[in-house]
Length: 214
Image (cartoon, rainbow, N blue to C red; front, side):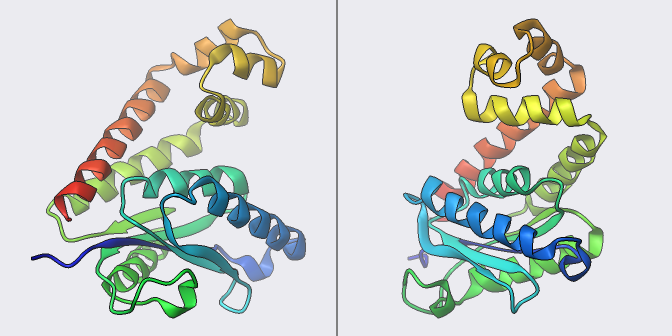
């Protein structure tokens, strides 16, 4: 019988101590973490907590990896243009499930910390660590999506971000006060279509991984 596996997510703001208006960024981070705890509350085992003493870091625990990248991407989008390194680890726990993340530890957290260290070393925003042969492929795909994201204009990023939230081109157009064809034109760019498809495939794989590792 396999041990039940969980998904730990650990991250920190890159070069947080030299960021201008650090107190403002910290306050934004606190509100972001609070929003994520509410948005993903049905999947959270231990709520995400922000730690100034650990170099403006955060960590939390999900029931599994299926929505882990979606949460990490939401965090990145909500904190933009602040850069954040995130490690996502899938593994067992050596402690009981508790809501306070300070009281939880185990393989999931060891893997998340290892993934975070690798993300910082490779200068990649998000890295995974789990016991499955597709690990390197997953991290390579995520790295490619990040590089392509960096090449987009601020307007293209904004349209993509709003599309994820509002789900409708018309709603995005009204929100950003632009025409619907302008939204459609951005979403039809070949690279953006490939990024969207790649993200969809990644979500499907993480959902499979969640079932496979049970």
